[in-house]
Amino acid sequence: MTKRLASCSCGQLTAEVIGEPVRISICHCLACQRRTGSVFGEQARFPRENVTVSGASTQYERVGDEGGKVTFHFCPTCGSTVYYGLESVDGFVGIPVGAFADPSFPSPRVSVYEERMHSWVVPPPEAERIF
Image (tube, rainbow, N blue to C red; front, side, top):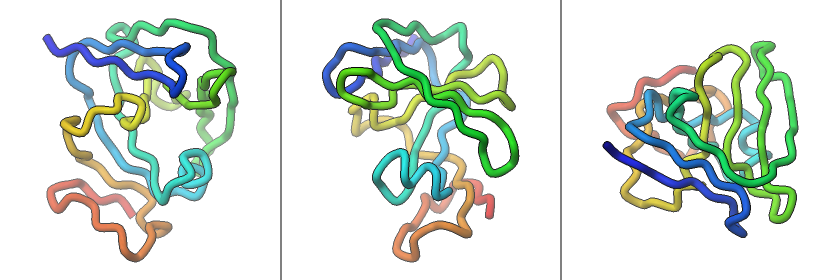
């Protein structure tokens, strides 16, 4: 079974996952752009029972565009977001794909909030596209 380790920049906060993600998506919403400092956020979703978190985290909660709460857990030392919970998808944990630092990580299968997508971004052709 596949094991992967997501980590903050300084290594203090980690999330070890077992198994493959149930969803890999890229989000073009403005909140994800601000949170990541990039033009989109990419995240993988895993069943909560397949995720083991180690280290201290600080939480930030925000309400998404459709009204659901998202609770981000980030390292209080370096500030990197390592995982988050979505109120609307109880039982799952989202992990930013960049936290795995793994160029071989599978590509996203879903692209959301494309109406806010930067004009030069091209999602994978096989990804489900939600505008």
